[in-house]
Image 1 (cartoon, helix red, strand yellow):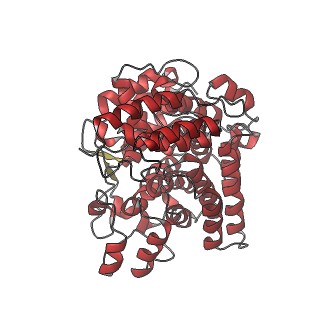
Image 2 (cartoon, one colour):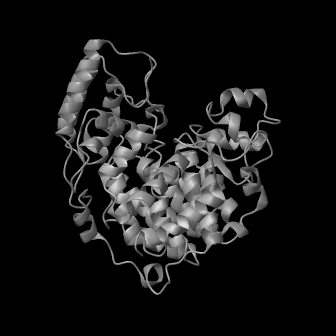
Image 3 (cartoon, helix red, strand yellow):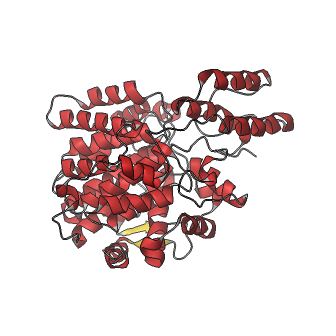
Length: 467
């Protein structure tokens, strides 16, 4: 059986990459890498999560040993801590425009815009997930959708283009123009639904153990990926998610600990704290530490701060200021989102074209895996900045998807932020009409949820959180 994101022999190459990104001693890493390669192990990380050929028992046993050795090589970092208090000590003070002098009450239209916007942005990216930038452009051009102005279609797509760039096989049957009937199931929406349930039950007292128990009770292991799948395995091995710093569930045999999974789980923490990005970021950290460290943690905190502020702000700059305020000032993530924001500002003023901006992002961050937090956060910041808020929803989600990284996740976060800024009433009909006011889920309970009901429940969280 080919099991993605979990086979020990596939994790090793990704761990070498993760250690290099985190500044591990290159000589120590190289010595271990040489032993692994001599034994027949691959140094090439699998883009889709699993190699085509299964490893024998000896190589798999060695892979586990190598992963244990590599864990000891992870260096500490004062600039990128995992401990909550250490992170808070590094934060800049959020500006008054982002957190103060507001009633902290989000209008129903804006909360609805956040849910519908997240759904629409995710839906745009679903069929082209795993297709690189050049393939997305070729598909869009071949079907008269370039620049991207709406959902993708297979109508009129030449057979040779389809063969060269096959749709995401799981998503295409439910996410092309010709077959969209509501928001289809997706982990980018399952997690917000799960967080909504958690906050209704636990409120501000939420713990990482609560999140862990909710995963085990509600999420099929096959519907979580990368770092979440590693954390799920670690929970089943009875590893401990408690504490204040990096949890064992996030660090044990988990080379995906700085990837985007925690960022996609953060929106509802922001929606529960309109106008209070610091409180939103705190709960996002509680959740994220189950599976992530360093910039994986910060990505969740950043997204929660964006979503908190988008419900009460009047400009994308207010939103982006608030997001930056919760990040450690010397972190790789802050540098990336500031770079993305600068490019987005240049797009908004007409100094750059979309091609120029995407070229710059790929030149600087293209070496990272397509599911990494840092590159995806850079394009999210760029897309939000380029959109400029009101009327820019389609431009923002299209740019996020056109980058060709984690298309559905980046599109979802950009859609969430811009939908909240605009409100449901400001979203164009072609983006929202196919949703029919409902989304599907693989969580227990009814297979579909009403976006109107989710809006009402989300607004009620403000009271539950004691704000």
